[in-house]
Each structure stands twice: as structure tokens, then as C-alpha cells.
Amino acid sequence: MKIKGDVMFAIIPVLIFSVLTEDVLPTPLLTPPFESTVNGISEIEIPELELLECTDNGVVDYEVWFENLPGQWSSATFHNGGINDAIRGDAPPEGIASVINTPGEASFYLSQIVNSGDFILAFYGSPPNRADVILNPRILILKVKETFKIVGVLDFLMYSHPPEENSEFTFQALRWAEVKDGILYVSNAHRTYASISGGSNGYITAIDIATHEILWRSRPLVSNSQNFLIEGDVIITGYGFSYEDDFVYILNRHTGEVLRSVSVPSMPNYLFLDGERLYVRCYDSDCVFSIN
Image 1 (spheres, rainbow, N blue to C red):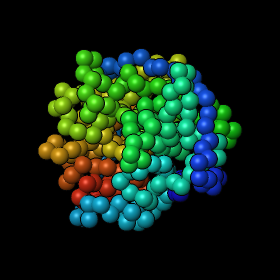
Image 2 (cartoon, one colour):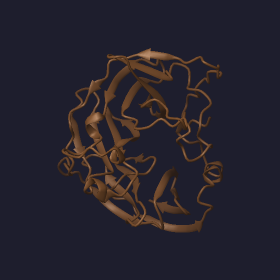
Image 3 (tube, one colour):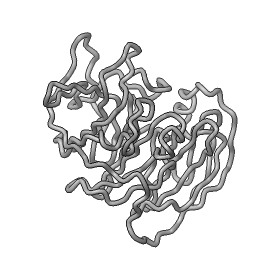
Image 4 (tube, rainbow, N blue to C red):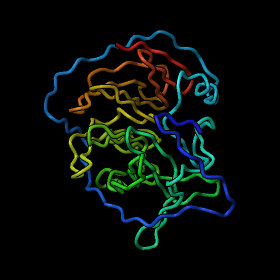
């Protein structure tokens, strides 16, 4: 398992029928706005993106892209719902439960972990289906990396659908999360046409960890990529889908305002930053940008 950071996680050996479980009490978050709620004005330097190269890929050869990255990826997946094996972990890091139990005997299963600064972020969703895919991740556990102390168990159920819309095909699952300066940044999106949910899809939300207050929410249709990046004062993310526009976006980290958009050939799935190079794995293309 490839994990980026100063601390390499210890891997628990895989034991048949042996699963680490944990009892938790999630905090249900309030329904967020399903429109942009920017947080005032913040004057920052806006990075420039310049396309250096963009080459066709084999569509399904994600392992090649990950293996060629100039650094380690910052997350791992733990079910068969991923689209590549390069970032799939054999077993969770020590101290991370495979299954969490909540009041009412509801159980949620680990789908992904993200190494974010001083925190480990663990994503949990519905029990695996017949294909061993964990659907609809909605619970996020924040643990301190050094001690594995829980600092938050957040339930994003109310983020999953706009008001008066509840289609099983448009569940806006937790996609990615990062922590910086006491703020939790999360993306929620469904994986079908935006029109099915009336265009209310693909958000990034900034949440105060201590109070759970929403500081801002981006406009819709800016983030359904598998991850986003925080670099200084900006967030780099991507949105796209079949027969929809495909872009890499730069957002103001302090306000949620979209500062810049750059067109890409197809849906941007993964983003990786190495110095002044931004690597973007799109559906059918591998692109490299310079960023300053």
C-alpha cells in the first residue's frame, strides 16, 4: 500500500473471518445549501496552469499512471469498487476499524483512508454488495495520526440529496477529504449525469472541525474527481462526465470562489502535484500542466 507522509502506517496481516470493529456515535450534520455560499472576499495570488502535454491512455490502465507518478499516493481503498489496484490496500492500517457499529445496530464498512497532515481520515459506507463493493460512503472518522484518537465521527447523510430529490442513482457520496488549519474540506458527488439531480452535484464544502459550521460551499459541478489537492491558498479539483464539460478548477481555499478553469479532454479522475507539475489522469488521457 502506498501512503504519502512522514509516518508509514503499519499494515495488519489479512486474517480470514477476522475484522477489527469499533462502536461509534456519529454526529449527524445539518442539510447543507445546494447552491454556492462563498465566504466573503480574500485576495490571493491565482496560480497559472499551462498544458505541457496530453497523451492518450489505455482507459483502464490506471496502474501504469500511478506507478509512474513522481511520489507516493496519499490514500488507499479497501474494497472492489475502485478502478485500479495500484492504491488498493490489503488490510487497514493499525488502529483503523474495518467495520464500525452505530446505535441501532447499523454497521458501516471501510471504503477508503486518506492521509491528511496530522490526521487519518477513514470513510465508511453501506455493507458490501455481491461484488464486494462498498456503496455510498457517508460516514467520516477523523483520527489524530500519532495517537489514533478520534476527534470526529461525522455523518454526511444530509449531503447525499438536494431537498425533494431522493433517487438511488444520485446519492452524493463522500469522495475525498482533507484537513488544514482546523478546517475539514470534503467533496460529495454522484456518478451519473448532472441533469438527473437538476445540476445539484459535485460540491466541495469547508467545515469548521470544532463547531461543524459550514464556512462555505462551492458552486455545483466543480468536483466529482476521485480527489482534490490543497496547495497554499487554493484547492485544485476536477469535474466531468460523458457529454458534459470536463475541467480542472482552481478554488479559493478561504472563500470557495472558483478562480480559474482549464478544459481537459475527458473526465479528470485523479490529480497529483509534484512541485510545479500537476499530473491529471483523465478518462482517456494523461495530462501534465505546469503550475506557478
